[in-house]
Image 1 (spheres, rainbow, N blue to C red):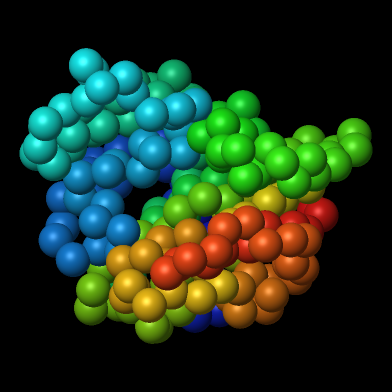
Image 2: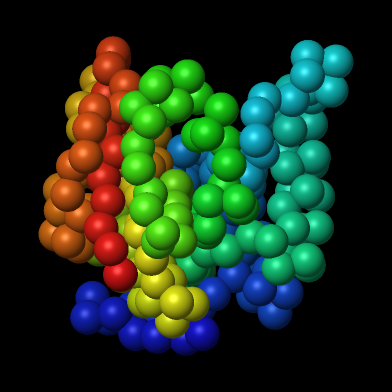
Length: 207
């Protein structure tokens, strides 16, 4: 998939072919959410790794996460949108079906909400990455727009997101996106999800 947004950027699906671009983006320093070591694996694991299996350092985490992400991409079990400016990958939006992004299902707070899904297929949009020099220039919005279009082409359904509603810990804690951005994309707040120094909500729309 390749599409152009009205912000003047282009977008491509994550795949075996675009994996080198994904690597280039995540090896850059200064991306939202410290993406250079997480490789957007958090939401793809159903739960935390057992203590005996957890790497000791971020460098060790990076090696493990990169290796596991590559395996998921090779087996078509990882979805996302790469956003480009002048041919260079500068942003990322992770999306996927519920089965592919199961981590939030293990959250007691989320389970307590007992949200209804009906018969619609459930999709999730979980993470955004933007290189430092392009923050505030519409990269995340372009990624979100392309992700929603990709979901529509795959049959659509109910799309769920978990953006930050308030934080006093800086931009690195806004990797799930903002309420305003999702509202402009047609999402509505369903319910609060978490509270504290960083608060978040559950937002939904149907495609």
